[in-house]
Every structure is written in structure tokens, then in C-alpha cells.
Image (spheres, rainbow, N blue to C red):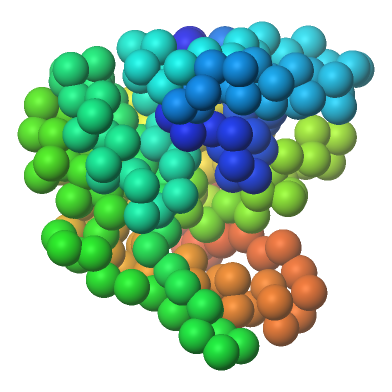
Length: 225
């Protein structure tokens, strides 16, 4: 699978690129500046010489033509970037991993975007795209440590069932991650907002928590759940 990560040079985008590439995906790491994307891709592969990582840097417009596209820009640039790339994103599965959160004093708080969530706003702004929300609750530091396993449930919200299924499949290319359908894009508002709560927990306890849901049936072949 080829995965394009638009705006992928930040911590979350780099971490996701490394983890997906380590599990067999071909990753196109995008940036507004092609040289910056190439530099970031080189830094990731240089950091993990013991892993075979197929990661190439490219302009965002090229990353947006991959089999599945992840929007990893900072939250307040996600919608504008999606609109700019609308011709490339139309008809594609587009995964929004942004969370609209801000720091107020010592606490992180969720903001409410125009449509309730960044993912729903992207879908409204680029109606031809098939948008899903996912990856909001994975801590970048832990996700990007390839020599350490990661276990988490990843909530997936989508109006388009095929987009939701494709996103679950992408999630589950990473050993230890389970994709969980959590409703339509209307539910993405709660999913994105929960990220602020988890950040506060991590700050208070100096941790890198992940989300686990009890009571779900195990995946086929997974004896640990």
C-alpha cells in the first residue's frame, strides 16, 4: 500500500510515516517545500538503519495522489491544505488525524471547529473526498519508536463505509493496533476532543498513554484480546 502523508514533517507525521514504513507500506512524506520533505524522509531512514523503510519526500500535491492519504498538518492548517489539494483528494480515502486543541494556562483544552470536528470540516470543504478520522490518540513519541512495540485501539469515524473500512485496514497493518469503528463523522467531534484530555493525563503523569477499550471481541488470530 502506498500512503501519502500530507504535511508530514511534524512529529506526528514523521512518527506515523516511520511506523507504517516499518510494517511494509510505501510512504510518500509530503510538505509544502519538497526539499524539507526530502530532508525529513532522510532523517527518518537514517535514524533507523536496522529497518528497511520505503519513505520518499515529495511536495504535498504528490503525496495527495497516494492510494490513501493522511492529513498530518497542524490542525489550523488542515482544512485550508485540503481545499488547496481538492483536485488530488477527490475520490480518495483521506484520513484526518488533527485535533483542535490549545493550551490555556497549564491545561490543554479542546476547541470546537466549524462543523464540530476537523474531519467533518474537511469533508464539507472537499465533498469529493472520502474522509475518515483516525490516529488522534496515538502519542507521537511512542508511535515513532520503532524498536518498541505499540498497542492501542484506534477509533475510526467515517460517513463513507468503504473509507472507514480502508482506514481500519491501514491501522491494522501495524502490529498491536486495532481499528475500531466509532461511528460517523459526527462522532469525530468527541474523538478529537478526547485528545486534549489524554494530553493532560500524559503531562500530569509524565506518560505516553494509549487508548484501550475493554469488552470488544478479539480480532481473528489475536489471542491477546
